[in-house]
Image (tube, rainbow, N blue to C red; front, side):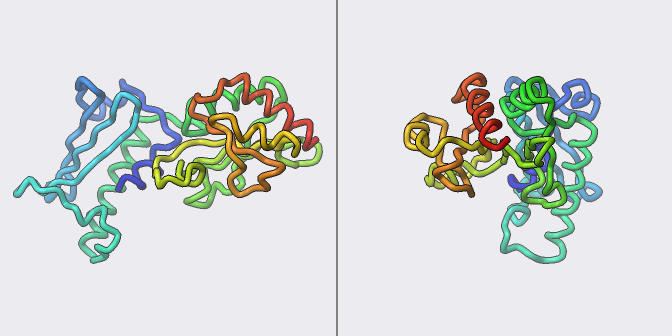
Length: 227
């Protein structure tokens, strides 16, 4: 169920006072929570690490075994769906009661969003907010022509590195001068654009491998090229 957890908490930030009120226990490397599920038929065991990533499993309290069918796509029976639904409902309740909303998953994406607002007076819009897969994709558009000059997406790292890494990260697509593409592609943290023309667009990874000021300079160029 890692994908469900990542989806539900991608644009959330934990509030520690709310967590302890909910029942989370402080431990050395974060917080833990044990919660009965389905009237005590199962027990959900959740961990939030120091970086705010939540992981969880569902335990059969009689055998103390993990209910592995929960995260096996091939398991498709009615009872499995009931357990999954109960677990998902618990996660949604925790997200609603213990977290606050942020626009994007990564701190750098949120910092740059504020810089764009300060400099260009433009806020992101989320044209695919009703799509489960693309709801977190935010576009920054010119007020005059509605063309977008920046797009923030939350994607699997493997779509950039082609190495099978499933971790999710924020990237920002930006327009560039075509003669600069080859030089920019050599910079760690900058890739040929995901789902865009590689000569005209780049994807900059927003994991702090690139400085805010360096990305902001690329944003300014993209703004001018799309004006």
